[in-house]
Length: 78
Image (cartoon, rainbow, N blue to C red; front, top):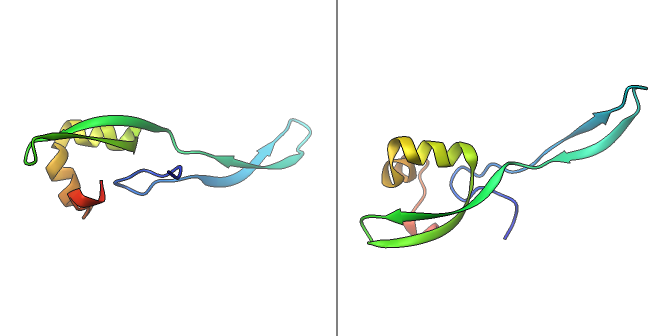
């Protein structure tokens, strides 16, 4: 499984680490992803997905089905 959020699609960013001497080295900044077990009430089952921490907060606020509808993600994709 790739390093990508299952709902929002958030993944890595590219950039440089800059030292005190202003040396630039290439670096990949990975997204803060967590494996989370979420309950889907309509199907009465749990699904284990890899989500960004921002998406976990959104699910806590709006609910699972409202979040999936907002981001146009089908339950079959999870």
